[in-house]
Amino acid sequence: MNTALLLVDIQNDYFPGGRNELFHPDQALTHAQEALSLFREKNLPIVHVQCILLEDNATFFLPDTEGINIHDGVKPQSDEQVIVKHTPDSFFQTELQEYLESIKVTRLVIGGMMSHICIDSTVRSASRLGYEVLLLSDACTTRDLVWNDTVIPAKTVHDTFMASLQDTFAQVVDTSRLYDFI
Image (spheres, helix red, strand yellow):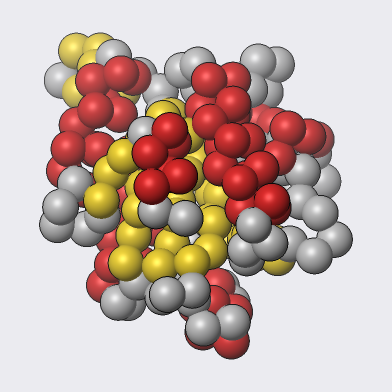
């Protein structure tokens, strides 16, 4: 089975000082770095997904800003693929599926940001397209949401999305378990 690492939207705007800081992004980054190190050590394919929002009302990931850059902690090497997207789903109107097919990937290990939007939509699409998905829950994070004037804490949002993806769309594990699969 050919396995690739897919790191989604680990970009500067989600970190302190960025336009849309998430809940504990540095913790998710640390776990993404662990997965990245393992894939680099084993010379396995690595894909970085970078979001650039083009809508007039976008408030972050704006073109030509420092916020769109992939965080230095997971900066792509020259032999690692970078896919640019403009919507939450990493497969929608991108070359991601074509690239993965060209290198015969059948399993994706996914981490990144945000759990409730880009990770959710990417994992569901990957599953629908027939990929086996291993989702690294501790290499993902999100933010607080508000619904009916109630703040839903980021941890609750994250846990809810991990639980909803588990078994139906992905096998959800912590990064420490990645060594069991790779």
